[in-house]
Image (cartoon, rainbow, N blue to C red):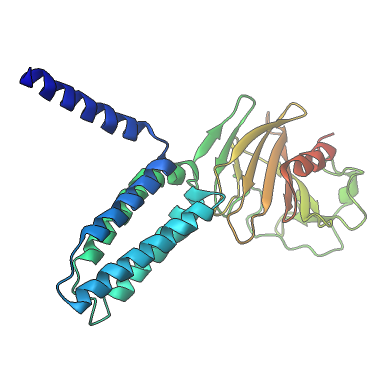
Amino acid sequence: MRRMASLLAVAVLVFVVSCGENKPPDERFFQIVQDEQSYLETLGAGTEDEQSAIERYSVNLSIFELGAEMSANIEWDVCQAGIPLERQKIADLRTDPRLAGSPLWDRYSALLDELETLLCREYDELTLVGDQYIGPLGDFRVNQGSVFDGKPCTSGFGHEGPYPFDYRESELWLDTFSPTAQPDFCADDDTLSAIFEYPDTGIIKRGFFYQAPLAVNFNALREPPELLEIEGHPAILGREAPSSEQVFLYAIERFPEDGAPGIYVFVMGLDLDVDLAQEIAKDLLP
């Protein structure tokens, strides 16, 4: 009977642990923080400095937890802002002569490592610059600082006008563009690279690209890029992290083939929502 009771206790423990592991990462995040607060409440302080360290740790933990609770995107706020800020606080506390010797800061550092592993690893992998996103219609590679590979310009963009030929006769030109639209010509060989303009929404562009997959330029993102389909064309959407939170949308009108460059469409704006960005892109996809 005693053996059966022991086995039952072990089974219950395994069940509780496994259920905890199956919780979403954000729920487990809050549980870990709350457990740490409960641990702090059990600590006894032999000196005033020890009591100050316990109280300081508890306050920092409460502020950290409150920020996560108020967040609309816990992965970004915790991984990109919260944890780095808390690590800086620990470094500052270690310089306080009254608090520097407390073992709690090593414990807090280990806790942050645990939370980072729990909540941030998948987020960092999904938003990794340089990753390839494979869609049903076409592939994209997120590449910070470069819009496309194999660009024809070896000396940059140098034309301010007069332009070497009427870019309005190019296949990149659409009636969607206003008379203020401008071309990008290569400085070395007068190759037309793109046509762009700055409407109230931000910027729109149609350009040539020469290698697939199309390398698109996203910086730090608030969430992973999203693959879309616009009028049968493959597209990818990114939202920049605060404070800009701009929408960036790329769509492929034509893939490069038989020496002819591909054509991509670009829409960017600070106040754009996804639906509006897609509507603008549709106008750029004849």
